[in-house]
Length: 278
Ligand SMILES: O=C(O)CCC(=O)C(=O)O
Image (cartoon, rainbow, N blue to C red):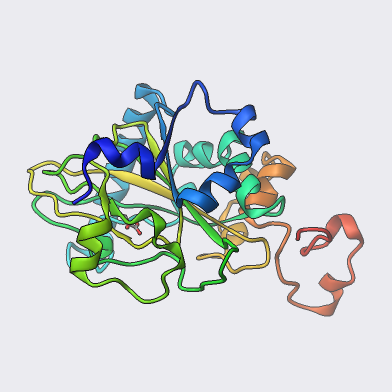
């Protein structure tokens, strides 16, 4: 197993105070391309984390009533920005959008925004070694994941495990290989985030405590890729009117497919697929 003191050699770490324009200007994309994984500490205030955790637990309880505890995705709430305004605000943060654009190009869009919560004494759908994007184009990143811890990750509550430099490996590693190379993110505190190439092999752990372990994850992708849901069609019209152009672009409003020729022929400012995305 990799020792904690070696984490800094493999994963680049930042504090949110040092992290901003300078790093974005110098290219967070270069760092992700070299390291595969970056940790940024103290990004979100305690009050916000508490609000997100409370709202997430409510959504999980709502889903349990609707789909039961046997639901395949129990503990994973999908399309969070449609469920609660507080999640929408996290996505509509310029730092979040700038990071995604810096790595995935100016037309980057949100592919998914889901939670990954581990129920007490259990795990969830992400408990097996996997990548979040099956395509491998050597030297070219297509999807980036930003996982935000809403609870401290510990060995007991199922800290996420990741093999940073594995993003060029097409075939899934064996358990033994993964265990030799992985890093257990048991130093991640609530409010820290881990940013990674979605092709890094990783998994959630097993929660052996009586309390939920909550996290939320934003996945960004290239502008010409499909989103997990048709997000633009999921918002209410009155909410949509308040969105900035930048946020609409990130949500995928500028890369919608026309349903008929009349929509295709609309004037440029009304078009569903806007020119110049990537
Ligand atoms: O929650 C975790 O620890 C891992 C989450 C994960 O692997 C995923 O959502 O793809």
